[in-house]
Length: 43
Image 1 (cartoon, helix red, strand yellow):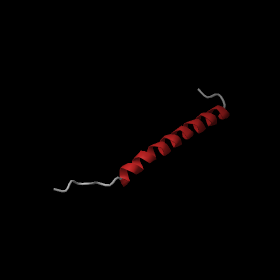
Image 2 (spheres, one colour):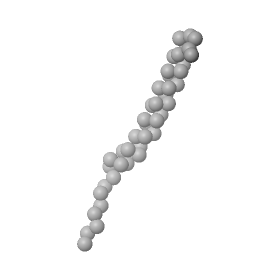
Image 3 (tube, helix red, strand yellow):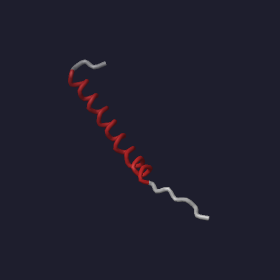
Image 4 (tube, helix red, strand yellow):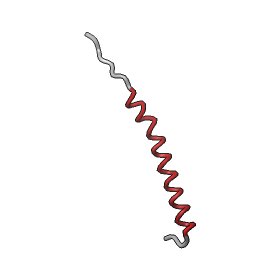
């Protein structure tokens, strides 16, 4: 429960920083997945 506007703002800011960190850290493996070259075996 938030008693003041400052409590609410601090919590919202913390949550937004966590979300941004998760998105940025998930982007690197996703980028490697997108740019991975498909190699086929030649007979």
